Image (cartoon, rainbow, N blue to C red; front, side, top):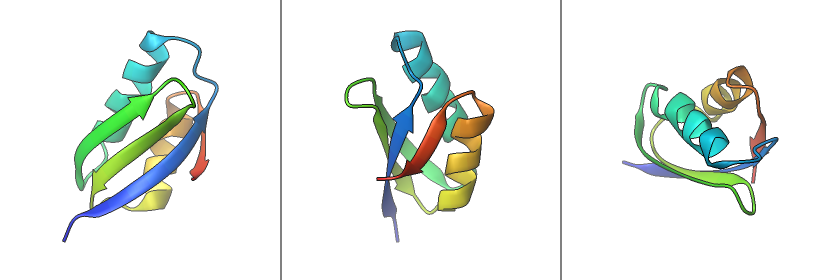
Length: 68
């Protein structure tokens, strides 16, 4: 079963930030696909990855994340 996780991401200011956040999310075990947007600043993650691991990955990449 594939879950959909919505995250609010703050601290991104350009497309490089979007790519960096997406790359961090894609590296988490259980992620099938990622769609990160600059405006309004969020991500939609498909897969069975743990939400806390997704948030930690974004934080490690230098941004703030929380469930949306």
